Length: 398
Ligand SMILES: [Zn+2]
Image (cartoon, rainbow, N blue to C red; front, top):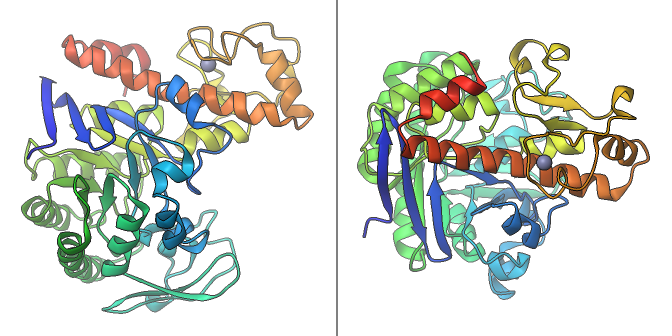
């Protein structure tokens, strides 16, 4: 049965429906990240109310605490976290790689960032899988294709992801090829395990890799398309420009009728540019992480873009921490219809942030998630009316 249906296309962008055992997901759409089976500071009731249709939980974190067996015993993720809509999990591999250092290559899997600055942990990749140390207490774990699928099946997710190796943006062509070949073997094993363990209705995504190399990206796209019913775009890309190239290479090499998920991407500019290139689903921790740090989304015309530079120059945010908002009677975004913007002022949010009130986290997270999810709704409507270009141009010119 084909669970994904494309309803309308406007050039390469498309609207569709992805059916799961826990409800339908309208696409294109954004998936809030609930790392520990909880979208930080937002209750399932508020998630529903702000329009979220699906939530992503992280297998790595849940296998360490409280453990997949416990969650299975409690009736699965939906019951455990009180969310009856669709749930997606990742393979766990990304966190293993990103929270440790890939010592076997002598280089980090990432360019200098928040992870590589942290204390290195043991992380050994073999043909079998990955041996790693828990970031909580340093105890040793192994994760491989069969275990990752078994964990995700036990968690009871509707959408699950094959286990893969993660190339580094610092890798040469040959090193990236070696990593891709390993990923292909792990994906074959994931598929076999999925056929053995999966419960009715679960859908398995294969993940595309190949770093910044066009021929490897195309090879990976064709491989995943041949073996899987759903396609997730993963792996390393140096910058925004390369990301868009990667999306074009991949989308150009896969079947039209399969759902396409771009892993870990969710900034406003990327949502527009990747929907334009045919992406259906996104997940990202940015909206809630930004909210906690005082970075709140605003629509064009109400932002303060000048304080942000380089890669983050157009992030459509204001910094609520700054004192200029202390007497601002406006809502965070005058165009936003969320619980926060319809009831509270920037001055109040500034006050809540400054005094460390818990309510700040709730209101700020609700606003940022509503903002992104509502934007996806507007994008779907614009595609349906063949006016995606018009909407995009009113937000960005790129
Ligand atoms: Zn709002």
